[in-house]
Length: 313
Image (cartoon, rainbow, N blue to C red; front, side, top):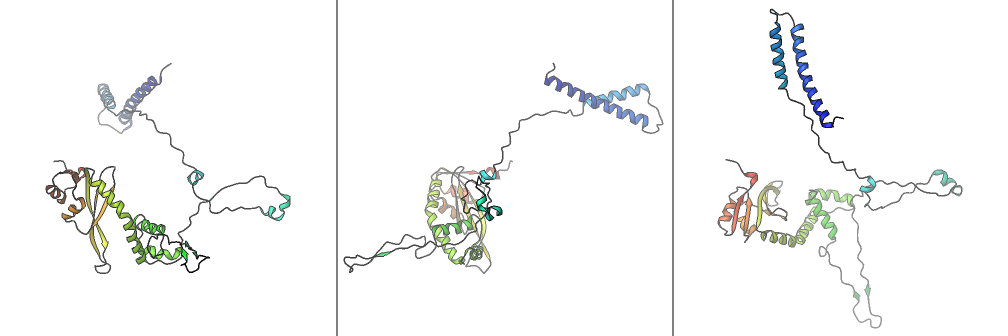
């Protein structure tokens, strides 16, 4: 019994022969039915033409069968699997009208369960902090006792750490400007001014600064840095109302490491001196002159170019 490979070779051979025969038939049809000719082809010319057709057909591209393996597609998770971790905030039990009318006639033997996924919009809530006061029964001359107030995110303020974190994430992760959050806050239950939110952002930045400093220190000590700077238009209260000015986000990182963005108002060469400080190691960047200039003035730093900006000679 012929193997699959032999059968495949035979199929390919027949396909090639079929191409040649089709070309010959097409040419003969044109000669016989293609219209009147002032001269008739002789038999020798006919044979010559057929031979030329066979050579031309042999040069035609051959069909190649390509086989490959395809990974089995993974089954999509069911809704029950996707939303299994969501908390259940309400259970709705629907009783048939017949059972409501005559409950004594029926007994419960089971149930059908399903679910729907809803979204609870942000809403402002209060967490009341109660500190009872006590006095000594035996001697009421002593001052009353009251537990110290817990530390607050903003001293003397009403914002919790969670609310401040939510505003900061909305601004910098979801890119919602504070004026828009101010407009949205009335739907949360009470209006919060954007000036207040701006103060919260300053508080959040103070919380995160030690983490930023640690990331920057670790990058400087790594011995290999990639650096770049990106122009960003920003609103400046010192500028004309509605006008914007240009600042720069200087960024340093390394593969697999942290990424640190540092906001500066200029692109001057001196900005690198404060950003990199006493760094020693390899510095990779584009061809902006500030980087080779920094390397010239700092021993122990080797400058290498960026492959993305490499142009072959």
